[in-house]
Amino acid sequence: MKLHELRPAPGSRHARKRIGRGISAGQGKTSGRGQKGAGARAGSKVPRAFEGGQMPITMRLPKLRGFANRWRVDYTVVNLSKLNRFASGAIVDGAALLQHGLVRSAGERVKLLAAGRVRVPVTVRVHRASEAARRAVEAAGGRVELLEERVTPAQPVVAVVVEGGAVEAEPEE
Image 1 (cartoon, rainbow, N blue to C red):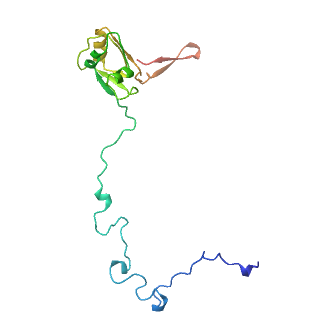
Image 2: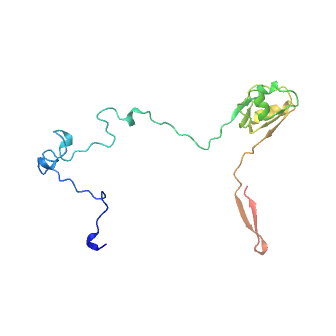
Image 3: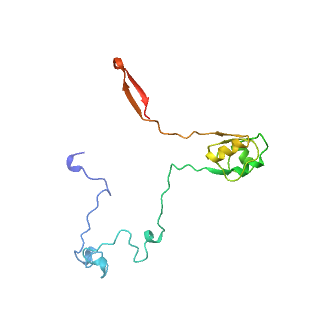
């Protein structure tokens, strides 16, 4: 093979269309633009989402409203009045609540609220409980055990330099 024999691969190169060079060229007279109209004129452009005058899909669809917090934690609410169906001294946890139809699954996060009155002493194991609900359960002879502790921000620490250059940390009041 010699330098003058080099050619591009067959089909990899196409000759450019010579538009408007007479009828015999195949792209003469109207140069492939058809008859009159906006498409035949110079500088014509159709907007990107134009649908021929019909209402565009971007306007036909409803708008998304609001905002969804991806870190939101949902709790299933159980009121004090629902605890009366349990036996005295029973342990009320996710499985017991599921058995009595108070939650949809045993793994749900549950919050105990103080609506109603509790008459039986039970041990309640929930993720959250209002202060009034906790007092009411304890007044009935039961107790509330929280399955998750609420995280509170740490107290700011103040450094105190003592004799000899040692540094002690004390929480700020």
